[in-house]
Image (tube, rainbow, N blue to C red; front, side, top):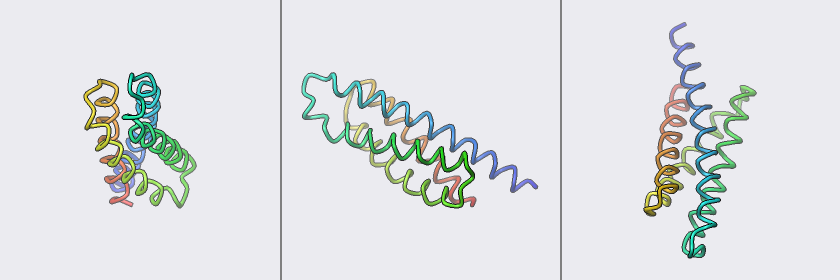
Length: 116
């Protein structure tokens, strides 16, 4: 029973982290598009959009308790780490907030996948 509760708690935390990360990534991409030198932000914007997409998908797979949620969350962890690395290189507040959300999501995905 305790294992089930821990998995359910990790599952719920991972869902919430994915949702919050998707929001942060979408906000960051939108803010990057308003930066004076958008071309410099191209990789950041692309990773923000990729990360938001996979986070939204991962949350959906978990909502449905899909047998494939673990695999999607593994991919989500990889993309979140990549996005955190890119956003972390930029000093703008929106990039720093996004990097932090991505790190939290990557950690939550990793913890959830390890327990399944």
